[in-house]
Structures are given as C-alpha cells and as structure tokens.
Amino acid sequence: MPTRREFIRNSARAMAGIAFVGCDLLAARAAHSQAGGRRREVAVSGRRVKTVDVHAHCAVPEAMALMGLKPQPQTLVMGQDRIRAMDEQGIDVEALSINPYWYKAERDVARALIRIQNEKLAELCASRPDRFVAFATVALQYPDLAAEQLEEGVKKLGLRGGSIGCSVNGEELSDPKFLPFWAKAEQLGVLVFIHPQAAGVAAEIPRRLKGNGGLENVIGNPLETTIALSHLIFEGTLDRLPGLKICAAHGGGYLPSYAARSDAGCVTFPDRCPKPLKKRPTEYLRQLYYDSIVFTPEALRHLAAEVGSSQIVMGTDYPFPWMKTAVDHILSTPGLSDAERAAMLGETASRLLGIKA
Ligand SMILES: [Zn+2]
Image 1: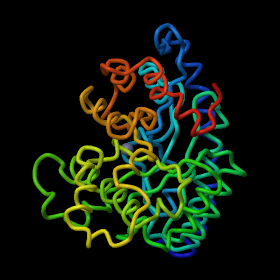
Image 2: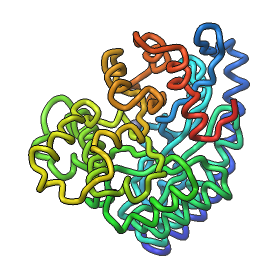
Image 3: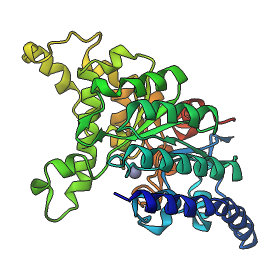
C-alpha cells in the first residue's frame, strides 16, 4: 500500500500526465488514413450497421501508478494500434472498461485513483466520440463510494455505465453490503458490465487450477462469472432490483450452457432454495445481457436459444486476441435473422449505452 507521501507524489504525477492520450488518438487517425488503412464497414443485407464492442479493455497508467502498478500488456494503453485494429475488424465503437485492480486499496487512494481514471476515460471518449464510450470504474469495496462514483461518472463525465469484477475481496456481488451500488445503477438505468478477475475463483482454488492449459483463466474466469450470476439470482438481488441492467462477460461463463440444472436443483432439493424466487432461475437469464465471446456458431446459437438473441451484444476482449473475428462470428452463425444479427452487432448495445445511430 503506498504511503501518504508516495500517494501525493503519485497523484501529482498522474495529474501532470493526463493531457496526452487524446492527442495520440487524433494522431493515430491521421497516420492511419495516410497509410491508406481501410475501415471495414459492416452491413447486414445491404444495410449499414453501427457495430459496438462491449468488451474492450484499456488501462490508465497514471491511475495504476497510485498502486505502484504498470499496464500489462502495453497494448492496454490507448494508442495508435487501437483504431487500426478496430477499423480492420469492423468495430465502429468500443465501450471501454478497466478490470479492477484497486479492490484492496484504502479509501482515500481508491477515491483519488477512480477520479483520475474516470476523468481520463471521459477524456479519451471526448477525443473520439464517434469511436469510444466507456464504463465508469468504481471502488466497489466501499459500496457507498462506488454509488457516488457511478453517479458522478454518468452524470458529470458522460460515461455510459459501470464496470465491476465478479466478486470483491472474496465477497459475492449478492451480499447486501453492495445494495447501495446496485440500487444506484438501477436508479440511473445504466448498464453494469461484470468481468471476472484473477483474484476470484483462481485465487480461491489455486492448487486445482495449476498445470498446463492456463486453467485459472480458461476455466477459472467463466466459472467466476457463473458463480456471480447464480448468486445474484438465488440470493434475490435480481428480485429486489428488477430494473438492473447487467452484462456478463464471456457469454455469461458456463451458466447458459447448463442453466436447466439451476431449475432442476430447486425441484430436486427444494429445501436448498429456501427463499421463494419470483421466477424460475433460468427465467432470470433472459433479463441479463451477455457478450458474444463464445467462439463457435453452435455456441452462439445455443446462447441465443437459452437467453434470447435480444440479450447478446458483441465483444472482442481487445487487446487480448480471444476473438478477432467477432463480426464474422455473428454474421456467419446460421439460423439468425437479419434483425437478430444487427441487434447483436450493435443495435442492442447502442440502445443500452446511449450511442447515437
Ligand atoms: Zn476481458
């Protein structure tokens, strides 16, 4: 944890560094067009669709410096490669988010860090309002502060929602202590993007996830999301705040793949579902949103069958190269109507994030 003196020095450095990235992006646009870079324009049956990537990471080094951290990989820092990649992949707008690394920070550090980070996100978006919107970051370990930060981010800085982890220092998002944050999100009517992090399942069962395959990521991340969504359903958070708009990363993890077991569990062992829910567990899946990072046409078809095509929004996980063909994945999945494809490619996300057509 930084000392107070380090913290003040880091803050001053951070504020001094704030002016640059917007200029880099404008320079990137000029360099890209000079180099003859072609922007892929996506159309469905001849009709241009504004595509939106809801799962795009970035980093604000000035904010990370307050915790003594540096962006890894460097491509998380907004720069010239970003718009080039978007143009190549046919992404018109990225909704930027930052994975939480500040959940263990003291309150004053967390407050300053989020202020710098959200101001910088707003500045990035303002530099290219046609290409970027962003989710506010919040210090969810202090739920009252997180509610304030979300409101300020949305109302004062023009950010379009909030992004959070799947758990906070081992506590579930359904814990009543987080209700002030959830209530604020519902009141503002904004989307909350939930992304798993290494501090979740991977930190709780590290021994089982060792070895080849990067299991802490390939299994741990979707499992973390599965657990988070299940708690929000079974602990009654979604009953209490029915207007919540939540988007889960990586297609909602494993939950939509095996959702019927949640219903069957309540039938088989009714004593394990003591709080009567207002709906069957799987029905809540149809009020949540999911990114399209499920890799195959069959997986996307199945996700749409389980949750409804209206609940799926395109994601890439940029700059991590999980899904460089997100547009073609949606265009090539059989059985979708043109309207469903257009909705997934960008129309649903545009509506949720206030992006103009
Ligand atoms: Zn991601």
